[in-house]
Image (tube, rainbow, N blue to C red):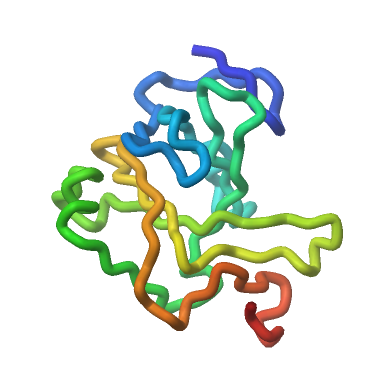
Length: 147
């Protein structure tokens, strides 16, 4: 199937690659179908979460463990159920990235990761209780003060 994308124009995707976000994403609750684009971590740590039904809705994301090696996610039973998690090895973890004009100020949201069950093709953005993780974690300079 072909979809129109924000950054890549028309793209051919496998319908089996579509990820269902039963609750949508915060602020975009009506948009439920997304696909991951650009999964080549050896070349580029970023991926794009592209909405299948709304071409202008796409998020740049990064695996937060590339920023904080011991980054962990604890989820409650209701989130495990929504995502149909049976094996945690099948769960992909991403942080949404904000890329401003000055890319040296690029940030990742470590407080609210996007979890994707790669087998069940279900996703959800969760909010973590961990106070060490910030909404704006600077990517370009790990030593920079976090907001």
